[in-house]
Length: 119
Image: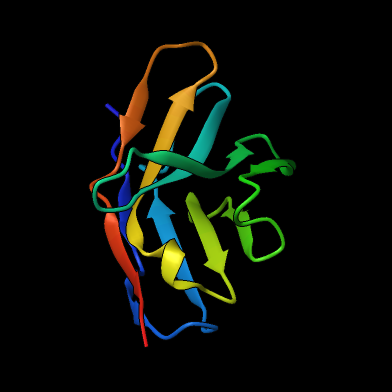
């Protein structure tokens, strides 16, 4: 069972930055996709960004965060980051890390971390 641990959330003012971290277990086989999702109060969970485990140049972003958020990988630490710049109040949500194997053998979620953007 792959276990993911998120950290880095908090309260910031509009225009400020935060970096979220998603730590993986360290070793596993196969190719997988690591993604960030978010869920605001009263709304459905939505996709934010993802990156491929074996090629961190392969990334995707939601239109709402393009140009402001950057997803990246630190392979030695088995950690995926979400750098969030120029945060807006509408970015307020619980952010979840997700990892799914391309083979279909697992699809795992972290516990979530709260991000609040408010003046």
